[in-house]
Amino acid sequence: MSFNREYFTLFLFAFIICSCDENKHVKSYRLPKTNFNISKNEAPKDIRKNVNGISWNLPQTWVPSDGHSMRLASFDVPFSKGVGDLSIVSLGGESGGLTANVNRWRKQIDLDPITESEIKTTSIVGQSKNGSFRLFRLINDSKQDKAILAAVLPIEGTTLFIKLTASQQGISELENTFTQFCSSIGMPQK
Amino acid sequence: MKQEIIKILSSPKLFVYCLVWLMVLVVVGTVSQRDIGLFASQQRYFSSYIFLFGPIPLPGGRIVLALMLTNLISMMFKQNIWKMKKIGIIIVHLGGIMLLFGAGLTAIFSSEGSMVIEEGSRSNTVDDYHNTELTIINISEENYDIYTVFDQALFVSGNNLRHENLNFDITILEHMDNSTIEPIAGQSDIQYRGMLKNFSLKEISIDKDDMKNRPGIIFQVSGSFTDSDGIYGLIFGQSVPATLSINGKQYVMSIQKKKTYLPFAIELLDFKKVLHPGTQVAKSYSSRINLINDNIPRSVLIEMNKPLRHKGYTFFQASFIEGPDGEATVLAAVHNYGRLFPYISSIIMSIGLLLHLLTNLPSLLKKNRK
Image 1 (spheres, helix red, strand yellow):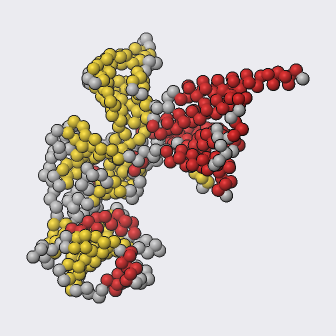
Image 2: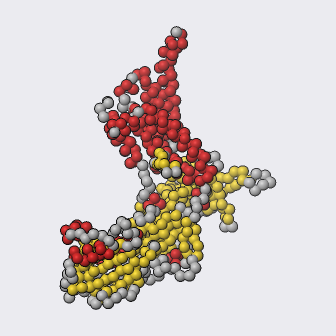
Image 3: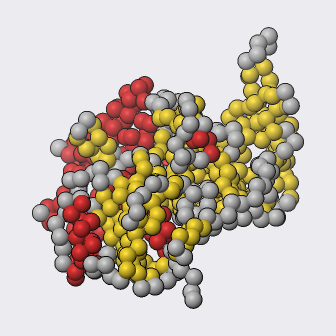
């Protein structure tokens, strides 16, 4: 019986602790209709913008802002503690290449440059309506007030650079919305 | 190091230290009730794994009880305990294991809540006394509503809540155990929706009486790409429900006490109260109810010291509400899977102690004669 009593004890303790429920449940069920006294409004429609033949679904909270001539579009992107700046730039061909552009963004938040292979391993690949795009989450731990979410999307012989600059908290809050925005970008098929 | 830890876990001394620590917890928990209230004290010292005493982390009730249970079970695997003359000790250990196992069942699965039923109406839901939940109801279907419910434990800042029923994402930005709403001066920020357009949700200090606390959450709705994307706030007991309209589907959102749906219903036929003569103080009150199981009603009288027990639930007559439209009864509903464990384990431990005494009696008498 003394075989592995000690190990059994450790296993038992771990089992008891892990058995404890933390009440983190998500439930779903159907019930007969209740009258909530709410008037049924017509649902708002998707907000689709079209610039130079390129279209996207714009979240309603994003407000068009004054950019500059290089930008295809600019938006103020609100989050819980502030407003981020989103820019969309369209350039012909590869326009300097992926490495040069990503390292330029990294430099803007005081991060050291990295190699092309590192860039590819640290990025996430998403899917837009006109093909895949690369998503970059650039965060410098010593720079809380500025971080960058960027996507590079080749589209019909041009490259779209979509960049969101906000605080680190803003980037965390907006990452999902930003990814969905990039996924919605497309150009009508010829 | 690992061997050392394992040895400590299975050492009988650990059980004694745990008992002493439990006594300390009982004293500290009882004293702190005065300052932080019964529920908060219970949560902090007895329902926690670890609590902070200033900057020092200390073991809470749950981890101590888990240690004791592990220790007792481990003792049963000792070679030298399985002897006839130690039968009493074995039985006492088994009783202890059963008691702690029952305590675990109660801690994990038991629920306590209230059921308010007006005269002439019926109910099959119990509202938890303390825990709340975020309920999102899709009211677009013609014949039924679809409820998606997230437990309070998920209200952690930065936590993403998703469900296949919902065509949008929710990110919790802030959770408040007790909150209040204040009107804002001027125009709110553009990202705010619903109540937060005109009010702000402010955290306030927790009330000692947990029933008076109004939990609140601020969360972000994203991914719908409609007007409805934005930041929302909800507070418990909100009079106007928050709504969302996304892609033709309409949702109602609220924070409510965690609801348990019973597999039967209770209909209040008549509520009676008896006052002390010449006063307005209630002497006793009772509820004549119909217990409806599979559409078959059974008449039952619930009185102050005569609860109704049915399908693992116990319904006590707790209180009543008198309104202009009539009376309503308030029943306390308790569901406790470990209810019988203390009784059974106490009997087992008593038998064990008695057997231990009897098996050792001859040797004790011998010693006395000498």
